[in-house]
Length: 355
Image 1 (tube, rainbow, N blue to C red):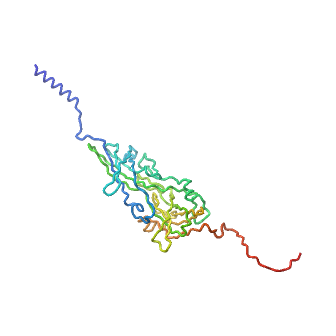
Image 2 (image 1 turned 30 degrees about the vertical axis):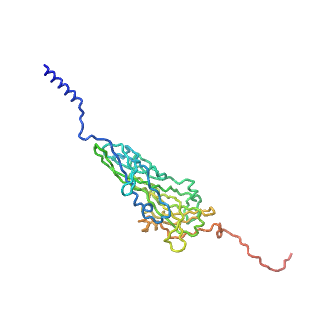
């Protein structure tokens, strides 16, 4: 009898234990996924390589954090995002940013970019991978005044009217990493996604030889015929409408110029890029506010300069002209045009006058 009771009790325990069992797969998936982004800035002309003039400042490309946008590869709609801010340096001296992603296994498109230290470069339309766009705003009225762009020159055939043209801020460097249709398999350990971010912005060096540099108080330049934005989810620079960028110029010297005077106005400026095959609208207007507060301008067509080896391979726009600044303390010859009365010396004549 006791044997029968023991058998029944064992059977009951087996049923209870079977009912409480949980079937587990051999691999238990987890949502632990991290990302490491190497920021590769070693080949940016005029910033980290091909420096023409080491006497002037270049853009700073360090970044403290990056945004990771996660998209559905089929619909291109955003399904998540993360901020990564872990910072290290790899063996090659590259910045590396890392952090965790709130995703599990599956297929994803990833876009990573440094949005938080790019005050001039704006990003919008983030909800769709094909629509996300980087751009800059129009320069402010205060900047137009500071750069001497408020005075109309519409009646001057040699200089474009900069008082009405649409001029944009030059963009900050936006470094972007793209991963399309990335598959994360089921896993029971931390999965690390490794990718590389590169800039979508170009840096150019421009200079012009100047006589009379002592008459320049400040200087700027406006360059037209450039790309207005970048749809970086598609890796596509836009071409409509062509835009102009404005930036300050530095006083410097170029030891490669023959002769005693080696003074130049120059700068490293940023752009979303030159529009391919663009001609006739590519020009630079140099603006100097002289020591009297007046504006002096010079315009140069850049079509042929952009075709030079220096421009194509090294992004150097070297204007082979000399700009002679006028002495603001000397009155210009025939100012204002029109009739100018002239008083000659007196001539002595003798004669009779009949009353």
